[in-house]
Length: 426
Image (cartoon, rainbow, N blue to C red; front, side):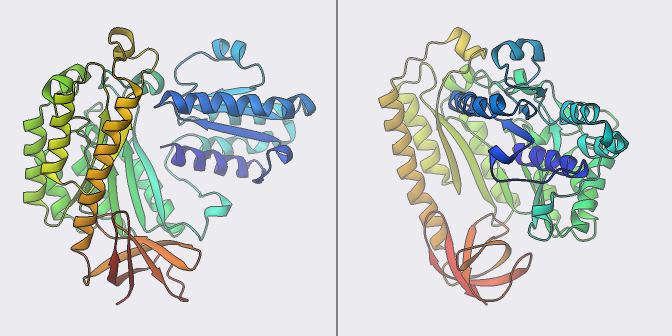
């Protein structure tokens, strides 16, 4: 989501006549787009702001913009007292305050304010930043902002606000504008992307939106994330199976495999229900890959409860497991009402046990690709190798002198590891 937001800010600034610089000391405007899912991310943002103070003191005309979840829904006056070096505070996905500040401050650019405003708010069309044009083949399109399903550990609903779906015509307009600039693959984003349209009776639900995007000429691949076990419907699963452009890859976090901890997290499903969902996905979508998120060390988690999570991952053998150690976020239900009673050393032990387990599972899954031909969309070149992804989101490297950017080509897999594969053009 922050990648998509940052690109929109960059595009809006370019339409005001600004150009990117890699050196903060050379900048007239610095935008710090923040994530606060974990405390460490917020601490890092505060540290970065403190490091910018000398630049502001030596150049008072420098505009520093703090954007994203660190601002959230809080009023700027509260933040201004704590962060006096910041000139503009922008809520998540809303560069409007920065554009308004710059156009009001620089009278010679007033005639561009309407153009900037068109690119600042999520109104459909999006021109990629200059450095991305002709070099980028995949793009993110936010379709649901905020979240109305407050898990006990999650700060997002408090910082990004209530769930809000974008109008389908805006999503389609953005997709068409991106395709016109060379984008081949789009990924629809939402904290719970499956809930798209639920807040707006006149909107289609996610399967309907996928149907509409599937008809857009030039789009080669469509993905979406992140799903929630409560909202990943059979209709959506069938839609993935039926539409050739929608890739057979599902990201649906379990978080844990123990019913007591799931209830404490307020996730709304059981271990058995999650396992049943995975079974339905695999039964209906041939060759599908599934990714999960897992949190270890949630308040009160016993060794036996952790073993339930270990057993779930061991049994299901999912393609990817994003692992995290629980850390309390100020203001969340778990932080207010549950002691963080699992020692950090124990969290690390459980984390590494799952990490080792998943490495073996991923290596086993990837080994099945050895000698096979798979279709790869090539996204960029890293050193001497082109990097791309299969429909199931597997990372593949190919060494060749040819320009493969944006091409979808068959690749014969010659080597596999737990995190990537290497092949040659078939």
